[in-house]
Amino acid sequence: MSNDLFRLIYVSTARPGLSEEDMLSILNTSQSNNDERRITGYLVHNGDNFMQLLEGPRPEVATIFGRILEDDRHGGVVRILAEQADRRVFPDWSMNYFRVDQGGGNGWMLVRRDDPIDSLMPAHVPRDLIYAFSKFIRQT
Image 1 (cartoon, rainbow, N blue to C red):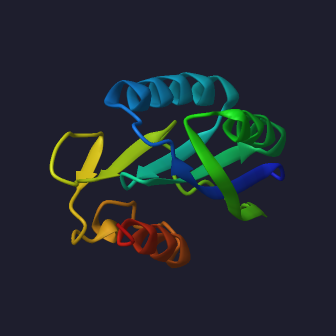
Image 2 (cartoon, helix red, strand yellow; image 1 turned 90 degrees about the vertical axis):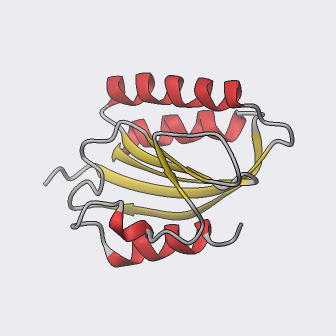
């Protein structure tokens, strides 16, 4: 166990008119930055809002979150969880992307609103995190 492993989850509202190019830019930048900083994460976009989990060394998570707060592609950022962690929930995902299908497009993980999220997540993911992401997805 790494004693500086930290987990943070936030939600935010996407800027109106956010394009597919904007999303690709977010994902490419996130994956590159996260690899360098030993950050793993999971980003969900339901068309209107984002929910993201970041995990890694606390100083690195804090730096990334500071950049997120300044990003004008979204607003209304609300931190909903910030805690020390015993182990990573998503150790193999520098930044996985999950988009709720609202009639078009695709993503790294694409589901419809009625698909169970727990079938797409690793078996060891804590039930409370599965519940939180499932609830978020179904708000669409």
